[in-house]
Structure formats: structure tokens, C-alpha cells
Length: 248
Image (cartoon, rainbow, N blue to C red; front, side, top):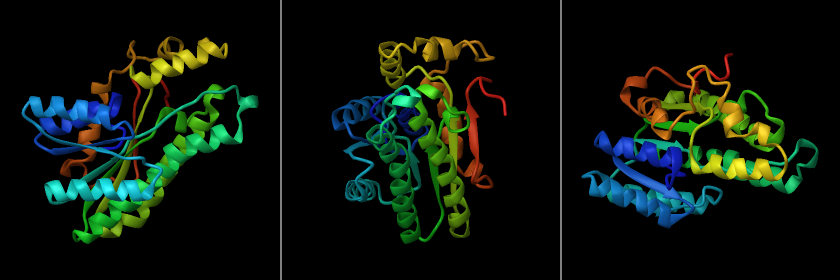
């Protein structure tokens, strides 16, 4: 599980451990990952924290090897790490675009490739679950690079699903909407600083049919389903978890 030091990733890691899985928490912030792993172990679960930069293939491979060395095999891989850095559309720079794409899209490509290689070494079969976003279906002007990166996640999910199905490997994604996480707190601050507070958390949450923003725990059941044998006949799909915010 990449990006497991906080937010959605931490919640999914806790959910996996509660179901008896050996949870491996990978994050660029190794201290944050270890804090979450420690709470899982305190609650009686099994967890290992590793520091991983998802844009660095060697680091991803090293994290994978630590996980397999510790627990014997890999059964599911979550590409969850992500970032955003909003800018008005006309001010978006190549540097801003490339930075976001590198983490959110290239990180998913690397993670998917290396997890699939490990699954093949184990004889085939396995689950890859990607964190997309409603922004991958509907572009938002204050964070166009983020929207583009999540559209890339959706396309990578579909492409990988087509390629890996013959090996019994499923590749799916879930697409959250407005979720109360540290990422959104920072995003709200950034949007306010650029005078786009009307594109922030409260404004976007007002459009949710179910009347409230999501908590990270709202994402967990779907994520666990996509990592389990219950979803063996599902691949290449993107499941929206957004309370009825974007109807397509």
C-alpha cells in the first residue's frame, strides 16, 4: 500500500490488517508510515512500514522485496500515493504539471509493472488496485494537472487490465470524491491563497447527494473488495465512491 502514512492509505491499511492481512505500509514519509503500522500492531494486527519513493523504480523494488522477505509473497498491491499542487489554469507551469504527473501517473505505472512482475514470479494471479479520482472523469480548472494525472490512472488501469488478464491478474481502481484527509486540508489552504476558495472542500462537498463528504473509512470496504477473491471476475473497472457527486 503506497501513500499509507495518512488519509485513505492509512485507513485501507488498517482495514486490511483488521481482516487478517499482513499490511505493508509504504510512504515517502517513513516516520508517518511507521506510526500507522505501530497502531496496527498495537491493535493485534500485522504490519510493516517501509520508506518508498514511488517515482523511483529501485526504491519500489526494494520495498517490494522487503515485503516479500518478511511475509513470503505478494497478494495485492495498492497504488495509492498521490499529490496535488493547485494553480489557476493559465498559470500552470511545465514543472508543476510534470511533478504531479510523475507521482500520480508514473508512480502508478512503476508500481503496477513491478507488482505484476512479482505476481508472475509467483506463478500468476494477484490484485492491483489503483486510487483514481472523480477528477479523472471531470477536469477541474484549479487543478488541471491533477485531473490529467488521474485520467492517466484510469487509462493505465484499463491498459494493464487488458495486458495482465491472461496471467490471472486483475487491475481495478476506485475514484473518491471529496474525502476529509490531510491532502484536502492543504488543498483548501492553497486554493484560498490563490483566491479560489469557491473550489474548495466545503464548496465541492455541497454538491454531494448523500449530504456529507466522505471519511477515509468510507473508502475501505470497496478497496478491500477489489483486493479480495470476491472481485475475481472484475477487472479494468473504476468504481466511484463519491456520495453521488458526479453522475455519469
